[in-house]
Length: 550
Image (tube, rainbow, N blue to C red):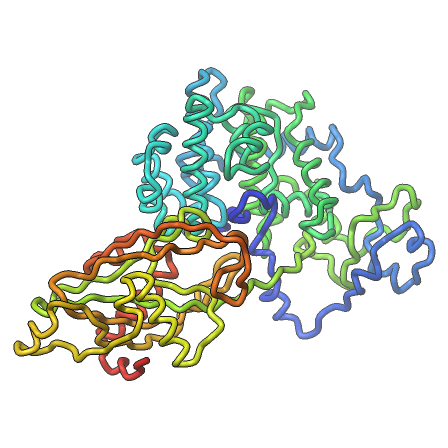
């Protein structure tokens, strides 16, 4: 099942994580020759001077190939609607409901809220995964006012396991603004919604307003981008503004009322509204016009799809169009490649930056009760990566990795949490006998630090390696109190005390809690922190792994 492919941030209107073709190309022993793209961009001059070899690999076509005119729009609309009627309820999406023109303002606003929640959840997440989360969310926060009254802890608790946690915090921030400034109703036009509601970009605004309010505005997510690129045989840099402009114009043409949509037995007379067109485009791109192995024989648009038509012909028209009419946007296509999957052109992905974090899983053990084991969790800032979630004590983006460096960093971690008494690591013997039970009840000390190894966790833009260690404290009748030093929260991408130091900072106050052994996984922690926990658990489940001590 294909996930809705959009970037975590709605500021990016297009991002498709599944556009890699490395797996399919690996099956081919020799890769087709590809002309240097930078040197073969079409221009009026190059059309008249290119060699025969160049011409054999250049897609020769008019720029009108990438335009959907009203007659074409009408036939595509009809085909889409007839197909959509047969699949509307196939995947059991609880947020997908027929448009009801008789709904009042409050009811339409409620529909907008439901669509908004579903669209944010669907970003980079499969439909089957989203459905139970959506149902739980609507049971907990059935209206936007109830969401606005919630805390970030309540929101993150419901979001746990869905990933991309900034989506949850943006939903909360958006709901609070809607209730405070707009009377609890989402704005009913895409332009204002995109401009004023945090976390809503052009795609989401178009989806919400077309589906809930019937506004004739387009959508362009990763699925629609791929579908329209094939429909128009558009082979150009997928994230470039000229490419996106062509695709947005095409998507907009498809939601306009051209007045000639048929009312066949399969298309009810009241079913044509822009939300249905947009949902049909998304559904078709997700389930039929897939990244790999598209189901062209099942596609209702295949005979209108230029990529499909080209793939069934031995060669395209070799006549070079007049300079004034030639497409100067498309890039050359490799010799011998005419499959549908050539479109859209594959994006060159920016390599995620890599960072090494030191993570200390701090445990306090009671001398009197060996079953009383508590673990320290610290709350992350309310903004930024994994906002509002809990984690173990972490020093981000370290550059020093020697044993002595790790000891110093660990000392700084503990002193920042517990005060200067932990500024210098002072080890004491574990209390394992009756004679030792009360020996150091008046003070808490580090009794062990064990290296657990590394955990790799990849975010959309960062590849994190968590260098993990288990820090054991003993002493006292209760876990030590946390006396946080002010923590510098760094603006932008740079961090104090790291390889990228030097950015402006603001001071934030951290929150912490001691959690019993059996409650750690129930806390609001991210997937990466869960991986760290599993690694450390192995140290006491398998004592033979405790040989590496810092």
